[in-house]
Length: 185
Image 1 (tube, helix red, strand yellow):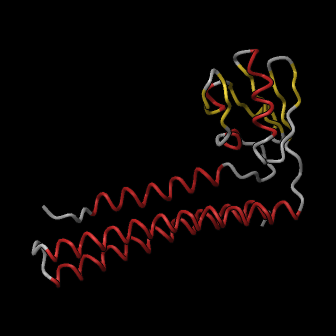
Image 2 (cartoon, helix red, strand yellow; image 1 turned 30 degrees about the horizontal axis):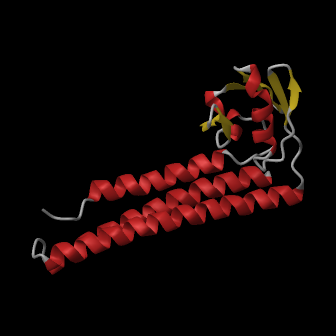
């Protein structure tokens, strides 16, 4: 049975791009978006849970997020989690609700966020290259076992490289779009 599996490589590379897009969603661009709080986890009932499992997040206005905490005893913990998430947000507690005004981004903060988007992209590219390396290694193993010829290995390596290049381009496209959005261009 050949070790090389093109569908598996495609799935893993696509997974790296999806993870990148999810990370990029969490970056603030000056507009309120419920996905801004997706990366926040809250320690409740003895375990870490995503914010959306203990509260409802809505955008009542373009520059305001509203978080309605379901259990009154968790309001303080949710408030603390949002403040310590390093997003530059300061919730206003109002009973079981938290109102979060989205402040204007300073030029310096925009540059920091753009840099962060770049580091997310670099992590994704490393993951993509690791998948590429796994594919190349399995092709060499298949050739060594005599399951494919040298010509077949070279043809498939070209295929893996094309897949890698296309996936890296997808990651770059997503990152460039987010950087433009952050920098307001």
